[in-house]
Length: 417
Figure 1 (cartoon, rainbow, N blue to C red):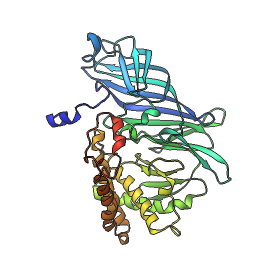
Figure 2: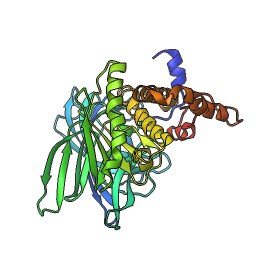
Figure 3: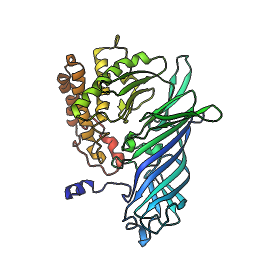
Figure 4: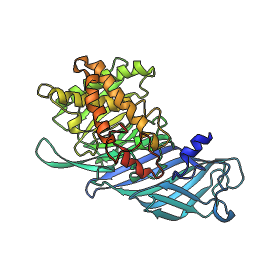
């Protein structure tokens, strides 16, 4: 690390770098009757040679700390898979003697009786429960009215920036990338999907539940993990380069997803050619969520949207509505490369992640429909909004130093975008 990058990282509040995740196997079972979920996480970890250097009072490290928020823990244990030392034999299992939850720092620390081996590979297994909250963050519930006029609930995720920790204990920092394997156990009558296609789908004994296991993701950040559970219709198409694209809608509204589907297939092909790197996943799902805080979220392979930013009737929609849906779609799909495949190391580079996507959304929309004159509108739209905000005394630099990750919520604005 150069001195300049060291200065840039100074003061950041991060989890210790001596224990690092390489893979998460996540199991979730939502319970809509009481708006909770049960979870089990098996996390493959590696420990560094200097694991014990920072332990207090010269003692060896006996703790593993992860991010966590609003989770209730039942147990935690780890198994030594591989070690280069004799501190703990391979195959040895250790149960946590103490579980410390820090609500202020949003962390959980598992304390073990024996020292954690350095230069080792471990599998940490954690059992816990959480809440299907109504705050549109983490793993949360949305209320909707079905085609028969009945009120129902679905569940979906929104993890950026700091809410993956509401669904599973993790190293919730963009640079701490890993592979994710997701398994969902849901009522048999509901649909469920995640970042990757299904690997298996089986009905469990009793016939009321089914277990859906998904393929492993590429190496990626925690804030990009996503899954949805509910009732959906969909429309689908395939890009010229062979990627299956689906738009999931509330039941009975599938026709309203056709315009966004056309925008998505065309922009994926355009980005493939522009970046010179093929879209790296086998499918792309776009889902309309009844209750959604943002305009959309670029989860890799499973992009979630506010309904109004995805579903329209092109025969009745105004030109402005069509442009809005198109640019929201092209913005999020640009992130599939710039943000997901290549990710900022820390939140102070949010401007680069979002600023490029703002440029790319207009570039792709102009490719799809040149008659909209998107670049002429850019100066009166994006540029003017940023200049108005920059004229205020509350303005900020494009790149804002961020020490506590929570501070990033303050810079999701027109200047960063």
